[in-house]
Image 1: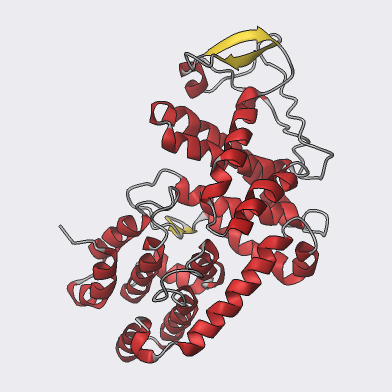
Image 2 (image 1 turned 90 degrees about the vertical axis):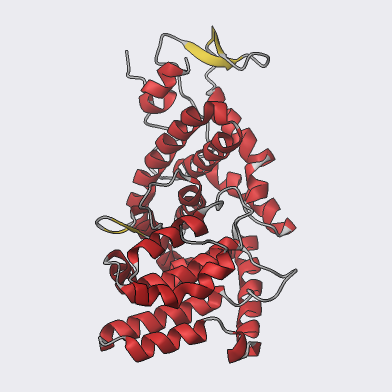
Amino acid sequence: QRPSCNNCIKHSVQCDFLASQNFGGGNGLPHNGVHSSHTSPHGGSVTHYDPLGGSPSRGPSSGLNLLDLELLHNYVTSTAFTIHTDPAMKIAWRINVPQVGFSYDFAMRGILALSALHMAHYKPEKRDFYISQAMIQHQTGLRVATEVLASVTEENCTGVYTFSALTIFFTLASPRKPGDLLLVGENGMADWLFLVKGTSFIVNNYEEFLRQGLLGPMFISGSRQSALRTQYLVEKSPQDDPLVELSGLIAQNSTDERNKHIYLAAIETLRKSFAFYDRPGPPGYETGDIFIWIFEVTEEFLQLLREHTQESLTIFSYFCVVLKRLDSHWWMQGWSTHIISKIWNLLDEEHRLWIRWPLEEIGWLPM
């Protein structure tokens, strides 16, 4: 008798995830396909779903994990369309990303984890169950992906990059803790961010290989968006740059020269995320325009943010403005107001005056 988790017992669903160590290998190596060969840990039966009542029933073992199939079906028919607004990119997330998952079990677990959170979002009556499955899937995939990241090759870089990209959406879609500042935790950089920032090494060393593979459309689209971003930054006048005033305040008031350099560098990187800010309509904001700051912001800045220095918090408040632009996505809803409210509570009266513009743009008023 293998253990089942409480949520599975509560919902009368077999806990195949805790009982199984492999989803197609479990060692992070490529395989010929995800065969989801979870045999039942309870004597040769498999969970089936009653299409009318929505409750599981027992039937002869077929060697299938129907929950995995449900999550994969939801991903390709629904979740994949919510990640990107560009039609070509929607196809890439819907078709190409699952193909990567068929070769790397940890990447497939990232797909299923995000899909489970999506189902928890629009099936509130089963929210706890789907969230628990999402956490199990992602933690299992994260352990393998982190190990593989230490020895990246041409054979596995596509899988690690895919899992890292999915991890961003998974983190944003996960239930928030009251004091969550997204990028930093109690002990330093948020755990998920180690993996995401580690992919910079992959891009720097394997970009040409990635461009020729299943993720090629993503990199081609990213290059086009990057060129537009550069063009718009050149065209933008200082009067239209919301970060000019913040840069001046920090340059004049920050007494620590080393920290001042870190702050100004973070603002310069953040400027890339603001490139499309005052340009309504296509081409408009895409997820990559937001996440570029997450990829490029330095660990030194994140350390200052963890220490809640006043300057780092004010810079972070401006990042909330671009987060707000993606608030229509289910996985981003509420993040901007959640973070700006935490920042407000951490700032002194002087620095609260520095964030009037972000407050107005987000539309959040202190209580």
